[in-house]
Image 1: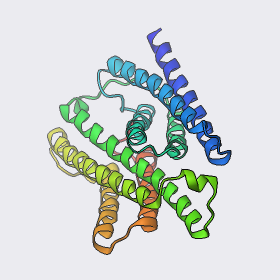
Image 2: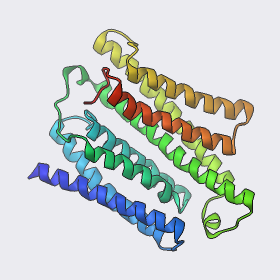
Image 3: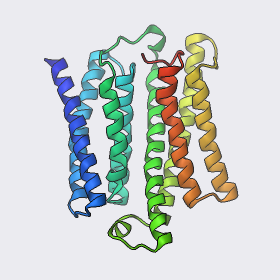
Image 4: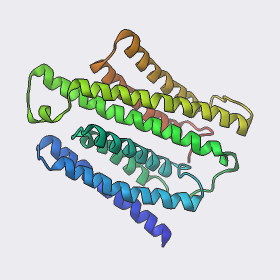
Length: 275
C-alpha cells in the first residue's frame, strides 16, 4: 500500500503541475487576473504531493532518491520549485509561474516515462559525499533553470519595449532592469553551487576510485557547463554583457545543462549513468 500511495502522490503532483501550466498559459494569453494566483496554488498543491513522494522514496531506499532517471528528473523538478517559490514570494513577479511551470511539467512528464523502481545504493555511492554532492549539483542546475525562465521573460518584455506595444502582458511583466537583476542573481547563485558540486565530486571520486578526474562523460560536460557560466559572468563583469545578451546566454546555458542531464546520461555511458 505504501508503494501505491507513493505512485499516487507522484501522479497527483504531475496532474497539479499540468493544471498550473495551463493556468499560467491562460494568464499569458487571456489576461485573466485570477489565473496567476490559481497557478501558484496549483503549484503549491502539486509540490506537497511531490514532497511526500520524495520523502517516501527516501525512507524506502535509505538515501536521497536520485539513483535512476525517474528519481533524478523528479528531484531536479522539486529543486526548481523550491527556488521558484522563494523568488515568487520575495519578488512578487506575478507571471513567473507561466514561464517556470512548463519547465517543471516537462521534466516531471519525462520522469513519468522512466522506470520507477527503487534501487539499492551501490557500495561505491554509500558515502556522506553522495548527499552533499547531489544537493549542490541539483540546486545549481535548478538556479540555471530559473535563469532560463527569467531570460525568456526578458526577451519577451524587451520586444514589447522596442515595438512600443504597451499591451496588457507588457504591463504585467516586470521591468527589464528587474528581470536582468534577477537573472544575474540566479547565475551568481547557481555558479558557486555548481562549483561546490564539482569540488565535492572530485573529492568523492578520489575516495571511491582513487582518482580525482577520470574523464567520465558527465564530468566532462559538467566542466563544459561550468565554463559556459564562468564565461557568462566574465562577459557581464568585464565587457558589460547585460540585458538581452545575458538573457540569451542564460537560455543557451540551460540548454547545455539539459543535454548534460539527459543526453549524456542516455547516450554516453559512464560512472554517472543512472540507468
